[in-house]
Length: 252
Image (cartoon, rainbow, N blue to C red):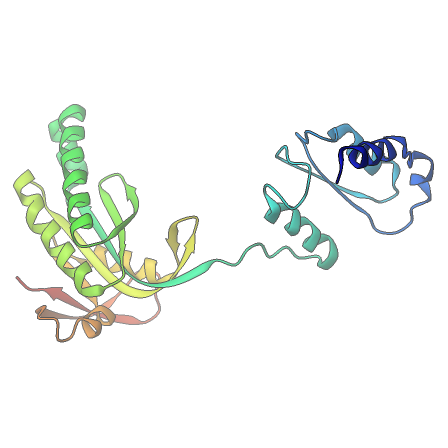
């Protein structure tokens, strides 16, 4: 648009006054406005919603004027809910991954005996060592809760080798860890993993003894032929799961 054309458009918009017909609107109406709109003040949107009978008013965070920039998902979600009564939101991604859980054995007792400062230093050394092994075996750190790690791998054999290396290396720090692994489809939400596969991995880790790496039968089947030796530890009733799961301990 030329400079003269945009001047004419702005003048036309400025001269338009629909206030006198707002009360005549009788159809379902949705008014959406971003609270920090830099082009049109939010008070104008509130004025509209107050004077259109039965209008639904939604005020969203942000300063973008046009609905197709900024947080477009929020705008689309409100429109979808207004038209259908349901807001589904964006679909989450799902990936097949091997999840690894580790945690320090008797962490609370160790921390109490060492004192806060020494424990914090030891914990930092532990975290650095685990992250070094994750980088070595191409694992991805998902979450760190206190003294434990949740990581994911695109290959179960690398995950097993990472877990066994971690359990061996932390002994140099005077620590013991337990680890559990499971492979399954996970939901990716905001960079984090969710879903039943993650829960199973956590439950497998909870069954491990100090210094032990336990894996589910799914992992055992997937690493067949990799040279990883596993010992059958029988069926286990995992908390929160209906069926029993056969678990295997990594040897060596």
